[in-house]
Image 1 (cartoon, rainbow, N blue to C red):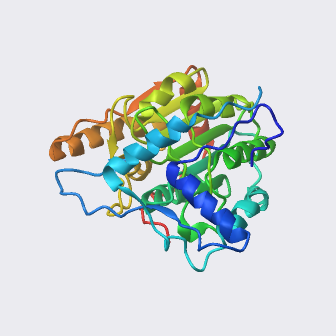
Image 2 (cartoon, one colour; image 1 turned 60 degrees about the vertical axis):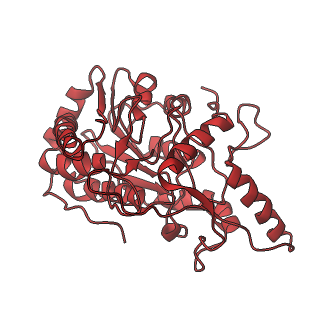
Image 3 (cartoon, one colour; image 1 turned 90 degrees about the horizontal axis):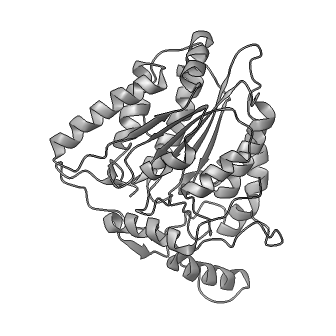
Amino acid sequence: MPSSLDPGRRTAIYTLAGFIAGALLTAAVLGFGPRPVMTSVAPRPPAPASTPAVAGSSAPPARPAPAATVAAADDAADDEGLQLDVGNWPDNAPTPEQVFASQPEAMRTALGKLAKRTPGKPNVYAVAFGGDASEDVFRNEAEYLDKLMGTRFGSPGHTLVLENNPDTLATRPLASWSNLESALDGLARVMNPKDDILLVYIATHGGSDHSLLVDMDPIPLDQLDPDGLSQILARHDFRWKVVVVNACYSGGYVPKLRGAGSLVMTSARTDRTSFGCGSDSDITYFGHAWLADGLNATPDFVQAFDQARTEIAGWEKRDAVTPSEPQIDVGAGIADKLATWRKVAKIGPAVPFAPAK
């Protein structure tokens, strides 16, 4: 986790509920006061078929101001309704403090399971980041990407899954700013940063200020924003990158992430929401269209995006909602690099989508 002794790091970001939960957690650790109050996003009644759920809604980089956290949480709350719930932390899981303290070891274990690269050809390695613990949909997409990498793209052991979910607190590293940095540090040692391709897939709620909700209450986690994500990536010498941000308003990431050697895709334009999250959903519209449909139809990431954009537009027209208009930016050289990879990759059969278990 960030060290307060490093002047380049900033204070962790808290939501109002996080402050309350943190205070009560401290009291519990010291041996007095009631059990910590947990923050959760209340389940939303199933949406009518015509109204899909909104999906999300050099030196160490600066972390966003508290307003960023509030904006992402507020946009999610518009659809979900934040409330305090004392019973949300699973009884059979490690305590919040134990989970917090275990993250360095969890990352070492996950990195130690990465498979060695295949020499003599470009490899693809992936980081899947499921940011919001309140909905299984983000976990589902993170773990499904792992399945695609292992079977469809012939790259088993090439994916790091970071996710916030009550069911995986003891088995997966948290999706957090610090763990994302550690993941890229570790991948840089396993990969050939000059020849291999890094795929980063982020799925969570997004705020109208382009902040991304990173939430495993009551553990205080820093939020991600375009400046932060671009600086995290810039600190690592990966020449070839594919970065996918699946969240509302995610088009705001394109200007910060675009560049030579980079393919950037987002599920919505800068001022639009995307659809398909919620407690009644297993996969978002974009995850369904690009991950499950597009990449099973073709291993070409750009072609899969074109197919997904058409498919999503059809769903949104059917549902009479404002189009999300997914965005793409293809930087110089990345299309040719991906074509080179496809020629030598062992592309396997389609992998049907199924929710994580």
